[in-house]
Length: 290
Image (cartoon, rainbow, N blue to C red; front, side, top):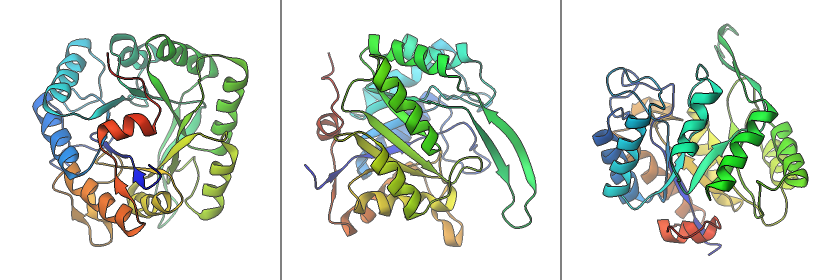
């Protein structure tokens, strides 16, 4: 199925709020709506950061997570990918809960600490200077929980060093099982810029047979999607990464479905078709749901 591309819809994230786009989901009902529309547009996977329905802030409160997972399972056929990043303010104990309490098909796993900043590209101002804390002991602990629960780690790499850290774990520990699955993130200040040299470095660093997708933040969302579709990767879009269906003209997306529909257009321009959830299960080497 080399002509198939797995499209992931990152439904919510931890930073984008309704003030940025009213479609950002907070409640289980809103997650179900966004997931359903993303699936209808061509998505196979939903990446989920849970939100407090009252405040919109990221949370891993067990009852709230359970309600969202149930809503997505009952209303969509999407494969679930739960975030263990949660937010920059979350504790490691809070960030473990999604994979301790649930058994999604996939979950994000971060193999390295980094600066995670907001800056002005016009005048160079540093607006928010924060650290995304991912000690290697936590990567080992989270990854071991995923392995025990039959969850495929999606190795989220903001820099080439994160790929190298993942290779270290692959060589010395058994929680990573070939073929590995990677996400290459572009456009976060503290990480890497998007260009062909960096993308090639990522692709050539991962083990043969691995699967990968690209994530472009903000205006990089659709250019990264195009590059991934051309070079055999998979694609992630969604309101976590970008709230505009037309970033050049600041046209807000009506929801995740609009962004997935644009990703489908991009994939077809590259001669590929969106994979169904069951096709994605095979492409990403996932276990059958019990």
